[in-house]
View 1: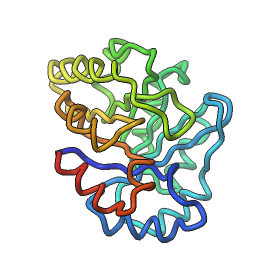
View 2 (view 1 turned 180 degrees about the vertical axis):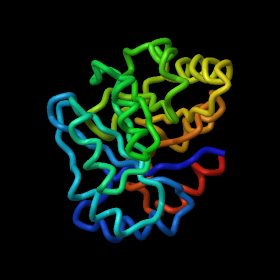
View 3 (view 1 turned 120 degrees about the horizontal axis):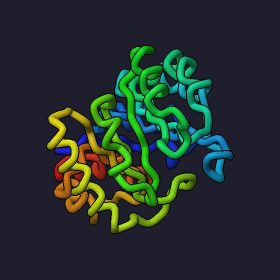
View 4 (view 1 turned 45 degrees about the vertical axis):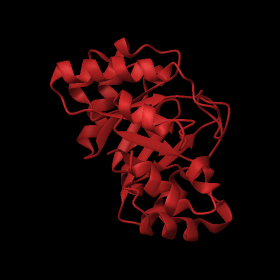
Length: 215
């Protein structure tokens, strides 16, 4: 049974209090918070002040996904804002192991995100140090994109790598997750489903979360 992490990027920013209430009352375990800098990805989302406010509205796990360059400059600030998990992109980190060490030293769980073009083999030497891999199943930067089908093969390959390592590393899928493709994604080996438009554009978001949770 997968962990469900609604992506606040797709929420109604004029009604974040109501959106938080909905998530808090739902079966979702995590909040997925996408931070974009307009440099690493061609978009700007929200940052530390918004996460600080959201933190006051929920005790659920805050899964903060940094789509930014030089994440080491901001790791401590995101910890103070309320991040429980901090994920950085392998493509954005020149010294990835150092980034992971910093995140862990601050008391957060550490994740590594990989873009669609990046092979999961690139994670082999860091698996023993991390808690989560975020596989981007769309190109990062914008919500509402279609799931890249080849991601299923990447999930299967990564699942084998993690199982062989003996480590407890979660596989998170971010982008284009729907009610229709979620069963196949979970069957391939995913542990965490990030869902944005699928949840927040639904007439009954809590029912959609419950359905995703059932797979």
